Length: 377
Image (cartoon, rainbow, N blue to C red):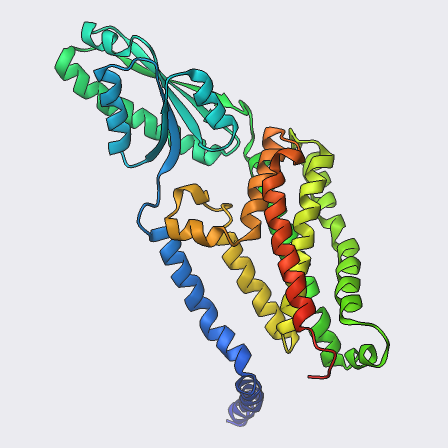
């Protein structure tokens, strides 16, 4: 009995601590607002982005060398499958290959010259699929879908013209051997270069305020510009090694073979690293304490992960998701780094994505300079 009373008494000692923590949270309405709004916002964005109208179609092109009724019917089957968004129908293989090499579509389906004639005469024929192998998951889905469409079309034509075979032939572009670990390198780099620098620098200014050391800045002749760019440069040197070490570790331990040059990958990574640091600085400027800064960092990271194309390619999501992705710097980085590391492009070929990331970086820094106050909050 005495032991039971002692246990209850010890258990009750936790109540004042719970009460204190709740009171502290209530005194910080911005934190409470973030705790409540963050899951709701993420769920709403996820619902609109991943469940909206038009989601799930993979962009491809078709090269119709036949031009007959059989080819027309096969293209209709592709459209009816609801798996493909046919961006264009070409008359030459060169146009089809270019559409895949440029990254505009994931694959190009070629219908040969004698397709309709072979169908009419009951002769075996084929269709050829040239696909981008830099994303193995998407490539596998497209191959399976083309196989299903071909089988369905074959059943229809067999009933019309007799039994024969239509063979889908698959050829890789940027392949043929891209291992899964290599295809995930862009995702790994995006996660490292987004999460680590942003969370690290996001507490830099609000930590100074909490410790009272920010007052020392106020008493010195340094300006807002000196503080923002001083912290940006310092944290850049502290975090730039993350990307280099991650790449070297993957290449040495797991035999990862990337097509891009180390210089080009470093340039693309550096541009995105500066963006992550500038976003973290902006978060730190608006945060009153470290808890708020960490929450904002995690919130931005979740949104970026959902709409950067690392989980599902943005091209197959809804129009709402594409609109959100256009405001996500990580989306442009994943696109650029995948093209450089897996397809062997130079940084010059992804200048469009790098310029967009730089615009976001400039905007984050401009907002930090505008709203950082040299005063004790």
